[in-house]
Length: 398
Image 1 (cartoon, rainbow, N blue to C red):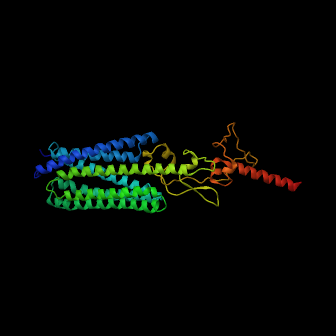
Image 2: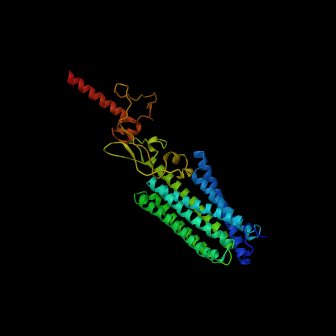
Image 3: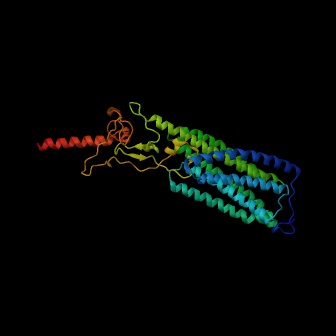
């Protein structure tokens, strides 16, 4: 039975027995990969909800990608078995699912790159370039693929045979370029600056790039088969595997951030062994202190909404990620009593400062050190300097 907009001369494509058996095997393998991807997506969604109580862009794109792949695999299988008849709505639906599949996967990859980029402007520009480039390819496929599948004319069929392989090659180039750029950033901006813990991320991503490119090459080769049964099923499986790779890279980044956070806490201590808590407001980002101004400045970089805080525990939720942004603290913002005199810190019965933790020995945090700034002792030193100056003035007057 002919469907909507199917011409009278349409000849249905009947898959061969061997292609049908292979497509069945690939469909089953795809469902297995889909189950593993589903379990990992559930865990990441749960962690995201626990920390943010909302669904962010990363989680939304993961579920859209997973749903698109499962839908393409299932609908394609029903079409191969003859359960769904050829029609304009079937081909348009498959193309819509394919568009969501491509866009979500490439944006997940682009946001992974933006995670370690120092410039928010460049990160936003990268996302727009990827979105526009993929969108133009999607539009061209809409213009060619549906008329070719409906067998409107031989010209559309021949054009689709050429352009179909060309656009797959373009996706391969974009995918390889984005992954190569990510590896270059990891190597030059992180590993080369002494962050050796990111070597594992670099090596793992190198392995996954080889796997991803291999899947694209196989997909292009399957387009030369006499029928599309195997090609349709393998396309859905290939993108499910790519999605699973992206989620594993996200978890690897989160583990590295967690390890880095713990190392920063454990490596910072005073002479008497005191260590700042991970919840300390000063340690919410990676800091450096300037010797001249004795004030804290951010180490550069940015954090995006799509950062992998969805995968991190409370420690990472407090610390942030690879790079941080914050305003500089100023030593000159001491409180006063209204007459220009500084207000001393009040001590409770157990020795705690009213604005800090337990009081440290004076020799443990001399004036001007990072510890004295964190503990609030810069206020006490300011008070001592003011009092000494006042006494000197009185002596001169006498």
